[in-house]
Image (cartoon, rainbow, N blue to C red):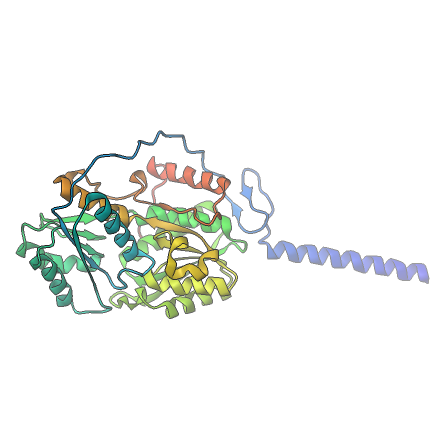
Amino acid sequence: MRRRMRGLAVAAIALTSVLTMAACAKDTGGNNTGSGSTNTAEGCKLADKPPAATATSSSAASSEKVDGSALKVGLAYDIGGRGDASFNDSAAAGLDKAKADFGIAEVKELTAAPNEPEDAKQTRLRQLASEGYNPIIGVGFAYAESLKVVAPEFPNVKFAIVDGAVEGAANVTPLLFAEEQGSFLAGVIAAYKSKSCHIGFVGGVEIPLIQKFDAGFAQGAKTAAPDIKIEKKYLTPAGDFTGFQDPAKGQEAATGQIEAGADVLYHAAGASGKGVFSAAKSGNALAIGVDSDQYNQKTVEESKDVIVSSMLKRVDVAVYDFVKAVAKNDLASLPKVFDLSVDGVGFSTSGGKIDDNLKAVLEGYKAQIIEGKISVESTP
């Protein structure tokens, strides 16, 4: 009888062990290694790594001296202005560097209000032009309609618009970016960092510009991990631009995605991204910033430990290069699009969460995009 009881106990322990192992396999996404694929210890089953990027010799930074002392530069911000820890702050950084490097004596910065009428933007641009500021940069596509009206009124003023173009206006320079290419790399980062193989995207406003971030992110994640699950949420519909300046709404959307199982979140939501970071911090998730290197932004410093990387949209480079080109009277030197090939977009490594192995993977995908072997979609 005693021997029979001991046998039953052993069988029960064995059954418990089998059930526990099965549950663990389920919890980690059934991460069995397949032939020809690379896998993390838990998380997604990853696709084959891209070929290593070939080493290229980088040109030394130009020591060319540019004199901008005769310029008065005007900057018309989108909503959020300087201090948004994102898009506008990147433009501000470019202006600050240009001022220091080129000896610009005077700059003036004005900021848009949420959902302001169109004539408010026209008034802002006219004010800068009337006060003698030249060049003037409109930070954001929202200035396109106003520039159609105002730019012809001041034909001798050189205007630029970030994320937009004004057809037929010879004195307006478009500063455009391949956001989808940088977001592709953000998607790869999310796939490699996710432990649940479940990630999320939070967009500020559902407009074509933000859909470029959405599309690239999803394509990059699915290229790296075909079975990954992606949550998606836009904070406001097209026409309601408060989605770029509502951290509470960003936090609510991100919290919902975390509760649904996402453990790495990417936002393209301007100042609303502060709420995404807060949700990630309280929900034991990771986050990917946007536009600026948000790990180093003072206004989100309390959440920096969850920021694994940021998709760099180098608005700072575009603003700096535009001011430089104006000072040299050489606007033709500017690229048509600031993409991966000119480091107009990219990814940050601040905080040490992108190790050498993942960096090599990202550089491999970057090379394939530049070489045209991967074509990144700009619409979801």
